[in-house]
Length: 101
Image (cartoon, rainbow, N blue to C red; front, side, top):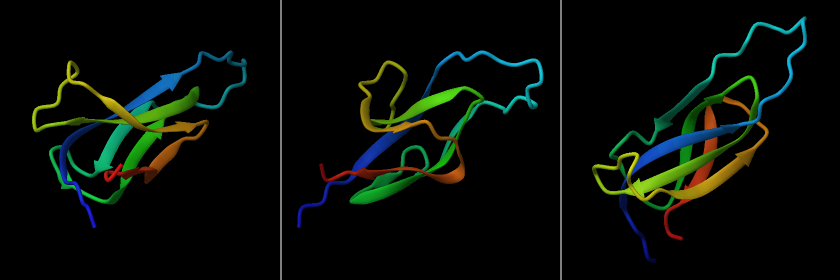
C-alpha cells in the first residue's frame, strides 16, 4: 500500500456573499476561521479529518487548502482539497483530506 506523508500548512478560506439585513436581525455571529487539527507543520498521511471553526453571518461556502513544505506563506502555491457549501461549523469536522490522491 502506497502512503504519502506531507508536511503541510493549512488555511481555511471563507468566501462570503453580501446579503441584505433586516431591521430586526439577531445579534451578529462573529466571523471566525480556525483549523484546530492537524496543527500547523504536522506530518500527516492517509485520510485525515480536518477539524475547526468556520463561521460568518453571511457564509456561502468555505475552502480547505494546503501548501506543502514547512514554511508555507500567503505567497506559497496553495491547492484546494475541499469546498463545502452553505454551512457553518463550530468545533467540528470541516472536511476530510485524502493525502494519497
